[in-house]
Image (cartoon, rainbow, N blue to C red):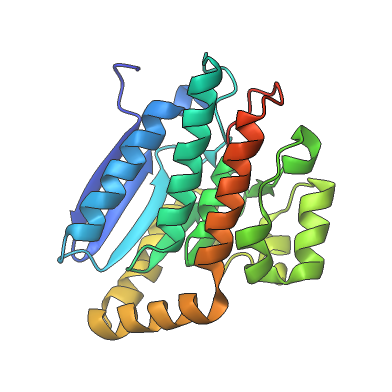
Length: 241
């Protein structure tokens, strides 16, 4: 594990801010970062003062480049990391409070999955969103993406593995607002503050209803099980999310 912080967490005025802090690696997500993010999610979930969770990074050039393909892992470690990715996606989808993703710069692979697992997304004008699963041979993406933009657009994004700009993402319904790159986190916090003004019990009930009627929690869990089995089968790829 690096001596430098991989994630940081703070809470103020009803909003918890979870930042990815691995700028030298383009916020590529390794096992230690996954464990840290899950721990912070647990803290925010249990803190009654937290009404909204915002996920961001300390570098407006990119939320995350995805899984850390340079992390040296044996086969057991690769499976464990995939389990943690699946757990993270599931916990974000089912998180009982509203979540907002700050989508500035490169939002790729595991970073893109984190973004679409959140309830709301604010894009920076420099957004490059990409789901490279088809290119890398990784069966990931449909469970959460299809519910956001529809089956046809999900097929287009997943099967081509193409980059999506901020304007395209807005047209597709993948993001809700677009801000200048350097102001993306600020704009996301403003959106979170709007949500945090509402009675938390009503907001939580609405989110539960939306999740139940959509069925995304079950789809996410099923996709995660498939990813873990895929990794356990030994495809020989270092990718993990």
